[in-house]
Length: 269
Image 1 (tube, helix red, strand yellow):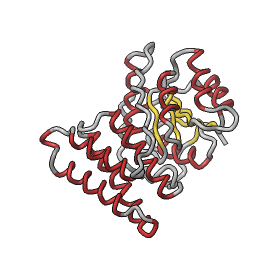
Image 2 (image 1 turned 120 degrees about the vertical axis):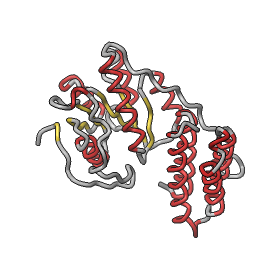
Image 3 (image 1 turned 180 degrees about the vertical axis):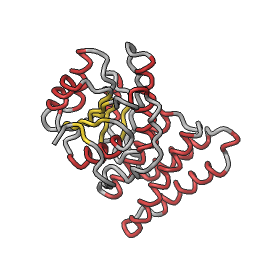
Image 4 (image 1 turned 45 degrees about the vertical axis):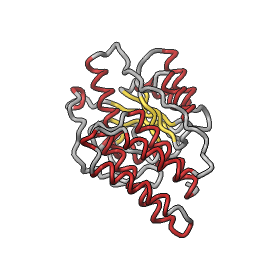
């Protein structure tokens, strides 16, 4: 089978999240995509993750190359010279931080988006300091990945000699309070909504605060399925707030990390 592959049908995986390959293509503005599709290298040691991301990006006009480890990734960067790399952090042979470090020893290209199933913001800080364009958590927010890839490749086309500016490293999450992670998440939500613009202190703010309280109320084993639903509702609302400009990217990353930490502590995955 060729290394650069096309779509394989609708895929849904609990560690990545559902999406529709028939959704509008927002990435067709790249000059290279009309006749010479930009190539993305996706590096993850879990084949199911690579399959989902391959489906997503090939459905949007990209050529996709997969690598299942760090050493394989370095070889394929040298062979294919991809326009961008999506790089997992934890891999058995050579972790993503070391792969990124070796790539940056050679030069500023290709731009690298880090992916992780772990909310270790210390690792996020290291990768961003090494020049990663962003650091995203699993399950993926595909809209956010869409924007990062679009912005990065558009910037690379306009200024090919200049790497995309890395996102600001997020602050590390503090240890859990005695009240528990769900309480800590709710506090973060309320603190964030207090900083909203006056015109945003309406429906969106109330919905966020209501969902934060609902998560705390449903934080028992018997109500775990309902709690998970509310956590995903919170995630959607936080995304809306970011897209509307009421949350900065840094605030969004911190809230996302709190969400992931609370979900894992409550559900075990």
